[in-house]
Length: 361
Ligand code: IPM
Ligand code: MG
Image 1 (spheres, rainbow, N blue to C red):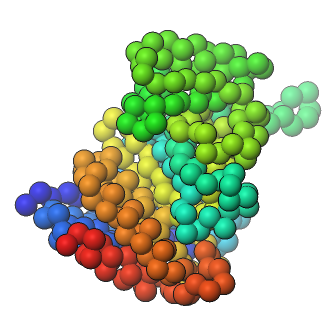
Image 2 (image 1 turned 180 degrees about the horizontal axis):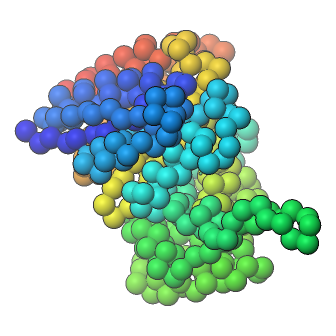
């Protein structure tokens, strides 16, 4: 039997609940497809700070490097909000991305027809939207040097640096072209080349690479214009590729356009390692109440099946089972609307699992 080792980092807040739900779904996928998933748990975020003083203990990093893929819940919470930037749970996230060289962050935003009314946009504008933001994740202004708060002539100045080497641009752009080839063959590259030199280089490298992908239609948009077009014509986008901070912002925008944050998965991939996590945070206000929406994490696991294990068919089956469950009217409170059946984490998970079994037989 094929066997995959998954490092499981549940993290804080609702993290443990939604990850447990997802492991039940993965086990069912394993039964259906004759594959075994082996789980090994590691600490990250606030729980890791509490137990070891470090949001990303060495042991966790080692575990991730020994595994075939990493599944992460969420990190952070009010308990750790007053710590300095360098010691916060989020630092664990930033470090694991860097240490595993997860340079491409894939954030799909698609509209689920049964939830189309939860979009803030008119249904006719948002219908059919299915885009994927490919965000550069290990460089740019998040990591550039110099950085810090310095003293200049007796006054404080805050400094961050947006820096990209051509190799850093090229590898993420290639990834985006490859993904576009398997989708609708349309790539939008987003920059601020009318103002920033770093964006000028970004655009040059994208142009160079596009010669290797003649089958992919390429457009360039400035980030401010792109932000507008995402709300004006969301359904015309396929793959968007951009740098770290623009991708951070645009992926949130794309996410809200299609409806619920509780439905958004993500994958962070490099050449060796890959990590899968929901886009939403740890939602400490509802932690432990059994009402968290597990779907974003389950969809992240579906991305793991597709991108790390080559199990495309299994990934599609998971997505279909979720679609069916939504069609049947089951909703966790965050996506509930009048006339639907309100359920908690457990029941939502059970409904998805029973659809998995039904659709596979
Ligand atoms: C994200 C988050 C993180 C980021 C924060 C929590 C460091 O906003 O994953 O989009 O900015 O990358
Ligand atoms: Mg963000």
